[in-house]
Length: 68
Image (cartoon, rainbow, N blue to C red; front, side, top):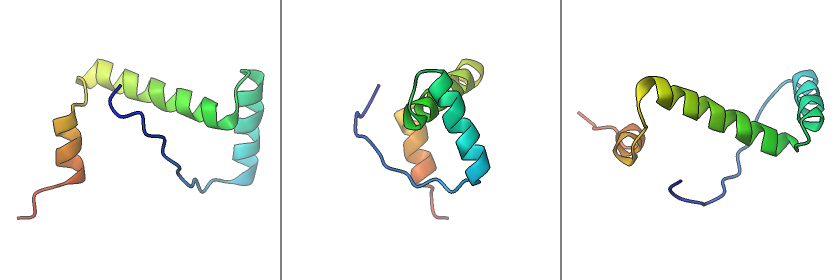
């Protein structure tokens, strides 16, 4: 996996939904942060399996769109 830099991200979410998420994370033996990371990894993996690997070039184009 390219780039092992850890990122902090502020998430705005309904308290009841997050409490249920934390409950599920605990049932899976994970912190809420680790559970979210696992879900994101699965989402990316599933997307790439269906659409092809997201390359560094794809990310560069996404984050630096051409200004026409």
